[in-house]
Image (cartoon, rainbow, N blue to C red; front, side):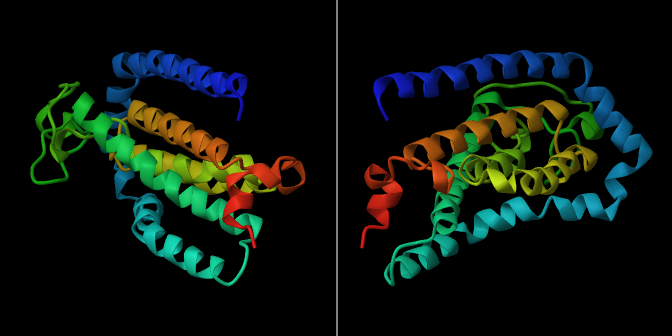
Length: 231
């Protein structure tokens, strides 16, 4: 990657971050509270399907190290297929995205929509709302959404490297993102911020790994994938 390409890789996420800050501010003022109260008042969080949809992201994170070990064992027998290398990069991206999320959670210190963990303060449970920066702890870690960061950290790598799978990725990921709000696990702005965070991390992961669709990988001989897969 040359300097011009890296500048573009830096400038685009910066624009996305600025746009996200504006959207988050608007949601904080006008959308987050009404949606959280609506979900609670209508009992939407009692629909089992929405709860089930929140399970895959943490499960995938739990099993990512095992996937990486299996990929290393598979590599010892010969080069990985393109999709297998994409899976390796996606798992690493997910882990890094969640690490960023944890750091930002402590930096922002936002209370949750609902009380669900050790009597945590929340909008609906205790009437507590807002950001309290530099206060670490699970009871004030709603922003950004870790689930959303994991989802986009994983699928954005596939989105870039395997464009044929984009419809399937959208169908699989959008319901999971909606479920986070439908369960009152997160505010709308938490999910938006987490998704943007995950997408940025995934974009960098794909760029560093020089991942492209198989037919478009014109620099394959010099890419990390080619080096990793060298016979």
